[in-house]
Image (spheres, each protein chain N blue to C red):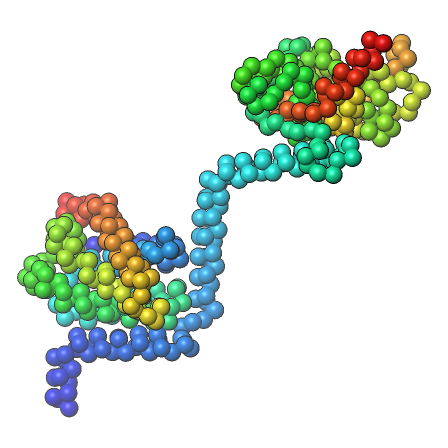
Length: 170
Length: 270
């Protein structure tokens, strides 16, 4: 658990100080914050989860000077995630899992679970940041950022999360 | 009241969600965000530092590219400088008397009395025997042999090589030669004793040998010895060029070299 917490803190600061200020190829923003919201343990009707995501987003807004943008996005995302994960995996299995990672769910199920949430994250960001939705630039931003972020999430999990889980189990 | 409490406890998850959405929307809409204080803006400083660091790493990897650009620019400027200081009524680049061929030193001997340098440019690049070779710091030597891709250069650190020179301040004509001892020291020859020579004066090329343009630095006078049995001073100069660290050099192509030499030859024969 401590390993996961350290990992999430690392991801948070990575996004705050570095990744959020870098626009790759003019269209791609990498957001490890989505990974934090996607991976952490599901608990049914957990107010704590919502509040933590709100505070996380708020903290991010403070560093990013983005006026509630990330706090709103994070709250919506977690709310949607909690509904979506039940649809995809089912309540019983979900509550057993410590982390909703690719190792726990399997590749395909993780894709079905994570990808729409990532798209939602970038859509909300794009909607509030640019003020317009139906434009080619926004479409490219959402799709390219979502794909890049999904790939990065998979890579990160194989590099870090797997080890931390195996260590805990030992 | 009890029903209200019951309702809240039943739907506390959704109520929390709506409350949080309300707060976040409020922050989003309201420009006067209460937490937007000077303290939090200081995060910009941290982010700025990260970017400075990131930029310095990026700059390091582009150094080679920048260095190449600077070398090209340096060559052009040097060429223009040489030609403007040796102005022969030329008012355009086409009329320049000298052009430079950039080359890299690939071998450099220093321990012998007759040292040679090898450069990576040859006939293919326009290098010919007898051309002068200079660097950014001063005179390097003269091209001895040329192959298709390489040339050997008689280094200034060669006891049989003499360069026609001038003392910059007085305009006194002289010659520079290496004694074969210290690579940083050269000898200034044939300066008559009746002239006043000041230590610290610059010694430059004279252009009389048609190899080098006038005014290319050779060194600086460091000691003047009058107490010798000769009509000339014994003068030591410190070489402007550190021969231990030569990398880039320029071969000088004098377009008027052949014309001048053939004219002088005819005159000599008469």
